[in-house]
Image 1 (cartoon, helix red, strand yellow):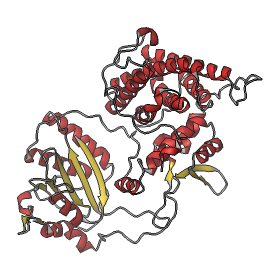
Image 2: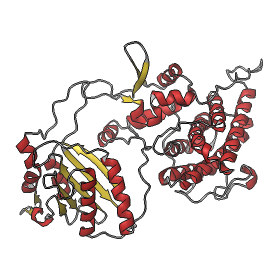
Image 3: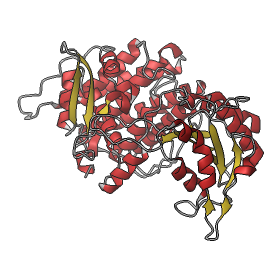
Image 4: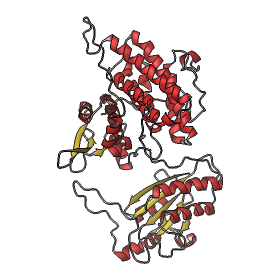
Length: 508
């Protein structure tokens, strides 16, 4: 069971939508299944002659306490540079799997009442709690609409950790009703794009939101750099607007990014802080990451006849160094060294970014690199903290090798194809071990993301005409375990977005 929570201002608009036909007439048998006073039938709106539900009475009841207390129910005028405060309307949808049995209205009411109690919105036995209703218009989910104003004193209610409490309620309901199990909340998922951001991207004719594009650009620049100055320079090279944040004394404390052409209603850039893109992209976390490994050695100079910045010898050595580091990290996970596993998983994310960046169109990885980078980024974070606090030597070796590899900018040519293919196979084996490690932690989302990434890389690294075959044992690091089928997808899955921050041509 999955819960999604949002905040708004207009209870009337929310209730009308929930009791309406839906955007595509998908809502059927709309009815109230639970309410603040345990009398849902009394609050069931009646149909008008035109077939629509008359929700005016229900809306008045929900908002009565807010009206009496004089609490605004419309957003204040927008002020440039200031965030719009969150409104008093709390909306949560609870949805179970399509493969689960259909819960009864009474079972859904039990789950909703548990949620209201744990979040503190309307605790059991508290007659002065907030008013709320649960509306059902499909077999597999219900919606809760609450106005966060107490009935007894008119004070605003601010639920603390309502996302975590909702996750706890869902997991308990799964066990109690025999539903498909889901993982506990681990606070590692990146902030998703909002509905407004998605609609804005559609209006602009773009295939992804500014938040998603900036996250990928920052992730790539973080591997290309080892200090803030180079990080900002790499971002600027990709067309990203950078706003460093400094204390009055000139000390750098953070940064914000804006995508080209993304402006608000006043024509000002829409800024995203590093932490809002991902927890491990905040400046303090980046500084910890850059300090976790030694910088790579000076590159081998090109030969006299090579008219290029990076010679063939450096390209070959960087690939060999990367293969060695990846196989060393894989061996550590195979040996069950779980004290190093978290740092290896995070450093593996840098290697994935490096491989997907330098291969470009020189190999079939170009077809899958965006999805590999996007999915594996979900698997690298440690539950509860995001970025590991300790870094093992084997993880430092892996990260240094990734820095050296991505400095090549490209690996192309017949002589390098064999090395790139070998590196992709080795990296797929490492990611498979990360998937097994995450599954042992019961981190199902991370395990599924790593498993899918391993499948995509392994598929892309096989010789043409052999897509359905499993790589030979000789292509895998010695001692690699058989990985459980965690979140596997077919190797022929449609490619996703590009993981290369330099891929500006895809953004219109």
